[in-house]
Length: 234
Image (cartoon, rainbow, N blue to C red; front, side):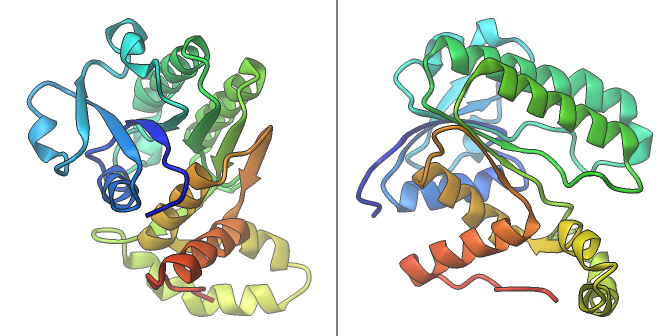
């Protein structure tokens, strides 16, 4: 159990990263309320308090944020691809905007957001939307941690393992090292551990965790908890 329990309000708690994060938060003694759509509350782990509402309409849930000290925003389009540009603006952008307004109104002390590594050669609209969301967070004045992974390896997301030898080579070459590090691969376990680190170690301003820092923070959580995470993929 962590020595300072947080009151966490989380969106996207039944998703790819969210469900695993909720489990880790509860295991470490944090109190968690999770926004879910009607009918999805059964997907939440025992011990998590469901908040049945619409992530695209803060008026449906903002009254439930009060009393939380941490807001984790994980709502986004599943399996992002260039074909989903309209969905990124309709869902990712709107959900983040509503979350920032709700967090600000509730005097949240720390806002945690998963963005994406940039600049990058593909997924232009996805990156643009995430950068807009980062701008909203900065403009709000909320202390925040923004995580910038590029690709998260996990169940159903394994094909980039074939690229690991290329990443290893590119990180050895000075001219290509910064880009290879910024656009490096992280595992789902590393991302969940880095999110847990962000919750338990709030920032006083706006802090960026890029890929190397995601790996480092997940290693720190692993060393403190005794739960192993892959230290590096390259």
